[in-house]
Amino acid sequence: MLIALVVITIAVVAFWAVSGGLESIQVTEGQTATVEVTFYDAAGAVMGVEQAMVQIPATDAQAAFRVEVDTEQYVGGYSYEITL
Image (cartoon, rainbow, N blue to C red; front, side, top):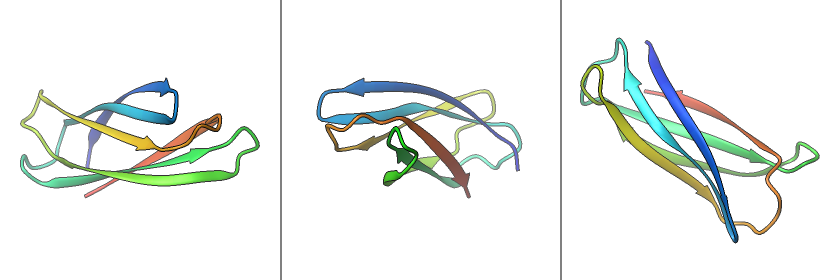
């Protein structure tokens, strides 16, 4: 399974978001992928885990997604996992 991920991080008052797009390299168009994003505080503790469901697009196309965590605390980082 090969899926490319393009990610842009955006910080806004009252929530933090990770948004981007999935691009299919060797996955069947129409399958559903789950993008799970874990948000961490400055000390590395988990602040929250959020998911987005994304339908795999045609080859050379991108499917946009956005995952938000509702907090006014500083988000020190994030990690993500993509599953089919």
